[in-house]
Length: 209
Image (cartoon, rainbow, N blue to C red; front, side, top):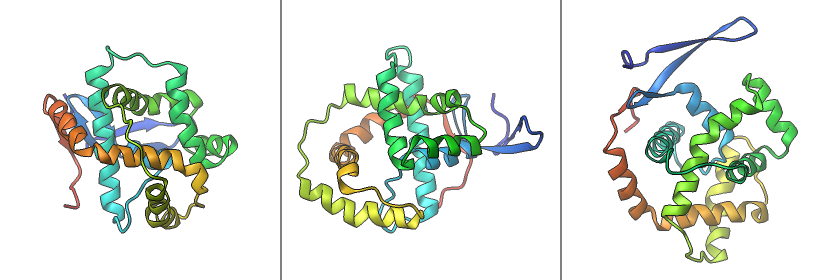
């Protein structure tokens, strides 16, 4: 059983220093740490909403990680992952960093091997695969909407994060996928809420709301 809120997890690194990590949330007895949130913000392509405060964005990332874990617990035995599944998410991360060399440098800075990186993204990979199967998104999104989102939301969010925006051509597939997800948000939200209700979820951090 997970102990008190914000229980510190001590990780002894090879170099000697001790990193104190804190539990941000639990799903049954599975934990999500502050470090997990920070890595998700570092690796996963950010689609921060226009004028979204940093703290609200932080908690939205935590909520996504909770959903990833719930779906992993619910469907791990039903869905198997293959190399192509991982490659889909890895391509997204590589686009964010711009090159494999920059991604590897980021992994090194976080004292992570490639195997650690693949283990970290596993739940997101499974989540996306389950969504593809359960919610096939065939609705066509007009290119004008993709372009509008790129200029209105994506470019400003990258500027806020101090990152160089990728081109519209590079971002179009990801933005199109994101907008398709928004179109089915109500149905998806109800589906996730029903599954999440089967698990004991505790957030150890105080929400900005």
